[in-house]
Image (cartoon, rainbow, N blue to C red; front, side):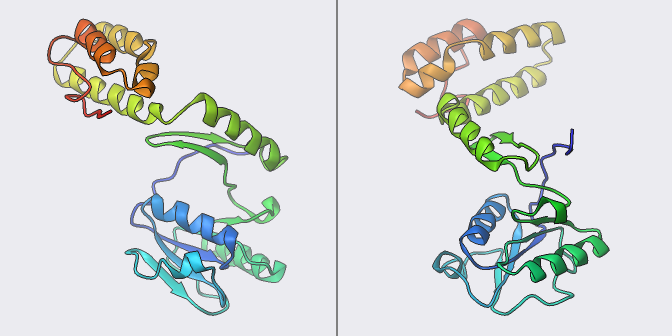
Length: 220
């Protein structure tokens, strides 16, 4: 592998984005959704970025990047239109030991951003190691069709059942068997169709009378 795949917890951590265009805007939204405190540095910003000025955890500096701006950052993304600025950001981040992504320039990055299918809490990351972002995007679209929004609820449901079984002290072999049956069940399809009766009947049969979609935190 050219890269070590990893998911980062950046909640409450300062992340710096250099640049104020559409690409930078997309990066900022993703960082904010992940719970980061984001500082954007750029003399010009999109209307979307300007609209974030009242959002908690967002800060903008309407000026050019200068050396020293990256201090105390946990992560840096540079989407500047200037190759010189991007090179300077990469160099400073390297000196400070900060993880840095320079958009569309893998050689100056310490990490690259994958194409993502987001079915929170389920995340599917796709990367071609920088060889062909278009292939990654095509695969993402294919997976978005195959793994629909119902999987967000399904993953939460399975996680809740798992936690309940752990609290109840169910033996490992039985726990694995129950979870395997649950995962192989038609529940994702029933959730997608809003078929509460079928889903609840299956849950009661597999897990007992106290298990329904609603009691497991799933509202259809």
